[in-house]
Picture 1: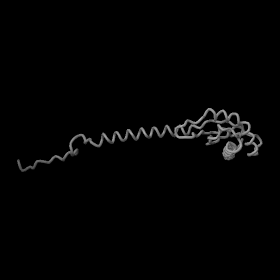
Picture 2: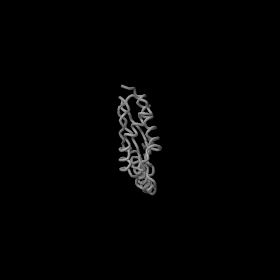
Picture 3: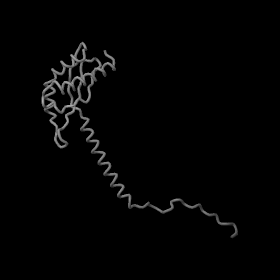
Picture 4: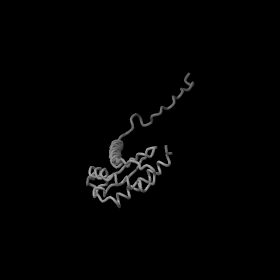
Length: 151
């Protein structure tokens, strides 16, 4: 069983090797916009999960996630060979590619924040013309004792 720092180091090294290989070695055009975001290695160093995201060409264009997934699956053997050569470990971990959901989550959070800002602006607009309920001076004045002069 390996220790956690060794697994983190190996995961970082695998990320670097896979990213470099996608950029320089693998000549699949579907992988041109793929970015490696994170890698997790199991404690026994036998399995590595590589998280990736596919960036779009333009702001409005939807990236080809399905094509990138297929291209990564077909290049898995070559990438594993390169990881084995680059890490020098006795057993080269198996690679599993998982699409990272961070960009979609960030967009969802941005949308929620925009809705909250709009709701806050609506409440502020309603509150700008409102007045307080009740009397202007909400505190009761202490009861004045009648003087004993009237007796």
